[in-house]
Amino acid sequence: MQFWLKISAAAAMVLTTASPAAVSAPDEITAGAPITLLLDANTGQVLHSVNADRRFIPASITKVMTAYVAFDMIASGKLSPDQQLTLSERAAEEWYRTGSTMFLEPGEQVSVDTLLRGITAVSANDASIVLAEGGAGSVESWVERMNSTAVALGMENTHFGTPNGWPDDGKTFTTANDLALLARALIQKHPDLYARYFGKEGFRYNGFAQANHDPISGVIDGADGIKTGYTNQAGHGFVGSAERDGTRLIMVVGAVDEEERRARISRDLISWGFDGFQRRLIFQENEKVGAARVQNGDRPAVTLVAAKPLVIAIPKNVTSSPTYRLRYEGPLEAPITAGDEVAYLEMVIEKKVQARIPVVAAEDVPRAGFFRRILNAFESWFT
Image (cartoon, rainbow, N blue to C red; front, side, top):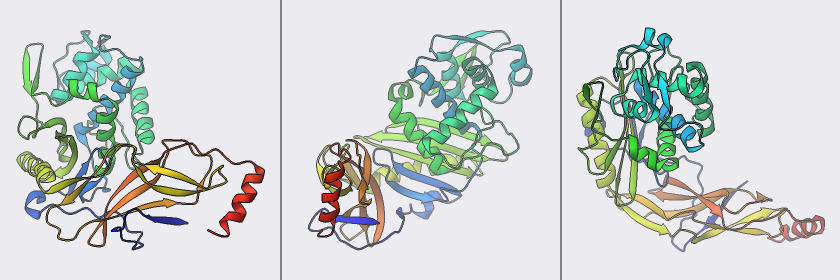
């Protein structure tokens, strides 16, 4: 059963099951891009979406997952930035100066730190293979880590066949929504490592200086990555991010036919994401948003609060004021732990749901004893 709670006198109580409908960016911005997505990384609010669940080939964007797996291993102590890895003879036979490269030599030892710089700045295929072999024992084991990580992140329409996105007869595929999940996790879970390795202008190694093809870093204020991708089959893709005044946006562009068009769309779309919206603080961190009924708990309801400051992006071109609603599937079942995401706040503009942002339980609600459950059952008849 769905429960709705009015959270302010102005909050409309119109019932709907519609999915969030992002305000589309102007056609002149996204023309020529079959797949585009723009969201607020802090809240998850989708600002623009076209074909965000359509599967496509990520090409070298795959390396974002390789970096994420490496970051997880570094954070857990399973991998060290100073650890030395080697381009094996087996790997060199296939990957010596194949495609994008950092010009590693067979048998050369190189640190994980340097490999990650080569992967994130110049999309080095050889570095990805060396990291996979050295970090997990084999490329196959590394790819298994990539896919298990994708499952853990909720990337339901993604599968990886290689660590570097080299064409593999369709084994590697993803969606814009899934890549946004990955990018958001990359930035939020590993902010220091993200800042260290992404958004760099280029990379010099073994006497070769190469530029980063990222179309927004150094061009758009606050931009700091993330990764381009290209093959003949995949076309030109890009996952990018920028932060201004505490607002971080993540964008995905996929299957564009020309590199320059990808660059233009990427720059214009993320600029529109900052300039086309006004940000409004709805609730402070830990501020009460409402309450939700609880079944079989030692209390009949649980207080709901904002886990962090809730800032909503409101399109500048709309004339009506937004309304806000709190929604949850309930009654909620005890036990509940403080911090659990048990409901979400909806923003509605012009009868369309524009955002759904999770809110959390403010306190623990243990499961009630036998007699309390009986009392709760009687009370439920009168509420």
